[in-house]
Image (cartoon, rainbow, N blue to C red; front, side, top):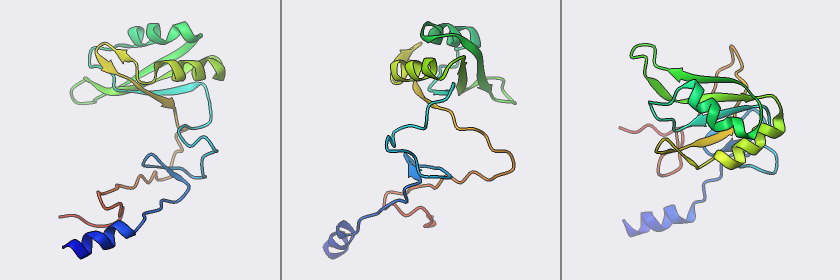
Length: 141
């Protein structure tokens, strides 16, 4: 057992450059690997079930002109899925809102804010599942 642990500790799992925070991107991200390039669309996660479009818009409107807010709802229950999107008029406003609101509490829950990925229709999105050993393709029982 000790020998196996020593052998495992010697192995270093290196992920390809295009996998950042468990997400697979079509091209490697820029030098600031913590976020995507700025755009005017923010992905907002960690929303309370009681959040509606108006309250989310009000929370982000102090950073600039919010042009649209979309909260994703479950089709069967009608309950919020806990995430949504906030669109700004300018990229700079979205960047300011992201920097200020990421990690802040909103209605009792911390928000996770990042720049949204553009949805590519027809192309599969591959998100590897990392296990404790770092092997994304190993089947577990």
